[in-house]
Length: 305
Image (cartoon, rainbow, N blue to C red; front, side, top):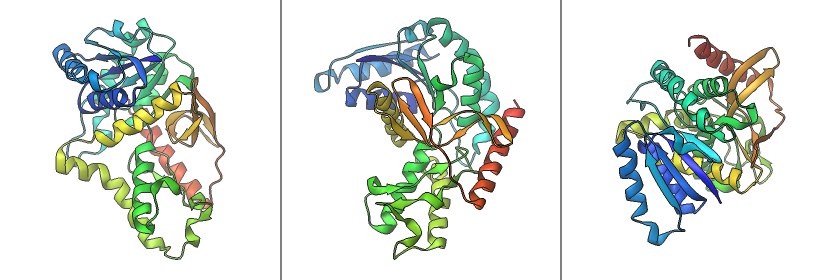
């Protein structure tokens, strides 16, 4: 059993702590927030339910010393996305926040895996990798894991098949330039365009719904935190239980064709050491162009910081 540290105890950080506690994944959870009382309040709320879950130690405060000995440090700190606000507008404020917290984290822990959740995800994953000095295998973000989950749910609803039996991935940016890897999407090995109810237009509409999903949730309830906390917990589980699972996490790409020095989401194997391997991509010509467009957008965002 391992220690998990969560930096930032807003909606996402607190819900992630709750989900990890429910799963019984860790022996210890540390909650860190600049608002000390907020972190302590969340810890108390969790502790009061300890009778009903596996016992664990929960600590809280504003000191980054709490990340010491953590196997995984989940970074949720930053300002939230407002209704109708593009993720890119968050960049300046959240980059400044990361410039202050990453040095504090590595002061007390140079061995952990750093999992970034804050938006704009790809840019902040890049910032975390550069500021930490860690191996690229130990720094990554949630990427398009949640987008992929949304896609599979909507495809499952359309085809009347469980999302668990659908293989389809969102690649590229965790943002508006993301794209679906349609050429390799399948249901039980059957190419999705061979399904009897296949409709290119409907599937494209589904992808638009995936891209707009975050804005719809924010418009209705102000923030997204349930689904992303489940996604984070599944990634953490793959690390702690050495599951070697495939996720479309965002990680550092030294080079891809003519592109280099960027973070984006590709199918990646995760185990106890972090990134085990990046799976090979077989894209059609349209997808190659979409990936290039996504990379250019992320690199432009990186250039601006």
